[in-house]
Length: 92
Image (cartoon, helix red, strand yellow):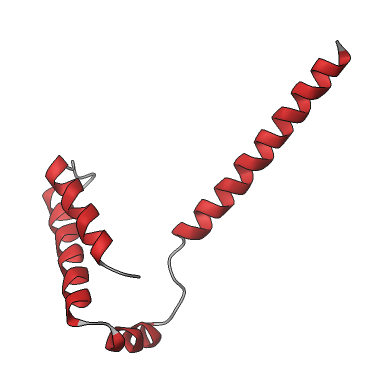
């Protein structure tokens, strides 16, 4: 019986460690870029017009959603789909 409790404890420790690791990875991926506006502007000069237009469309759609409700906008399936498609064509 002591081996079962030790194995159970070990499994819980590994799961907790993996959970913390995954949490750190996700937070790192979602952290906004720390580059300056000047660097961002220089990078934008190398982007194609189609990329800039698609990013602009994505930002305008996000603003339209935020103006719809002040606290928390209710997204419709069409909104989710358009945000997904615009985000896919906008490269970062």
